[in-house]
Image 1: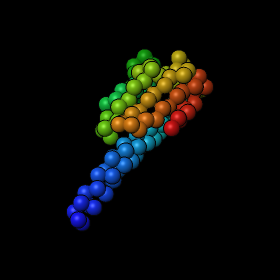
Image 2: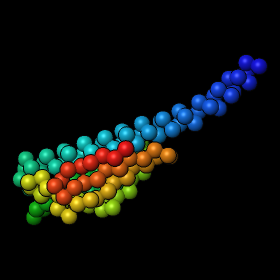
Image 3: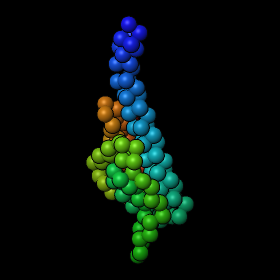
Image 4: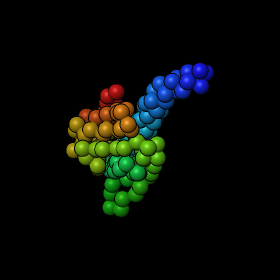
Length: 131
């Protein structure tokens, strides 16, 4: 009887725990992408130079654009948390004043299982989170 009760309770708890772990992974990946974006935007402002962001599921890269591009930020992508990333534009440019260049309404969707979060850039260079 005790084993039957434990079995029923665990059958109810496992799917909830899996969904909870998926939401945590998506939130962690979204936090990392948002932090990466803000760090690259601040670098563009402080260095007074245009920055190119390359957002891929396996890596996040930021390079200063000039005669010779130089990568100054390189972070692992959200796939290390098991989260998929889809972007309406894989490359975003940020001007030296912090404004997005050709990045208006770029939508980044992070997803794992049933959990998902969206990040959207504005033409002013801001990043909006949708949960």
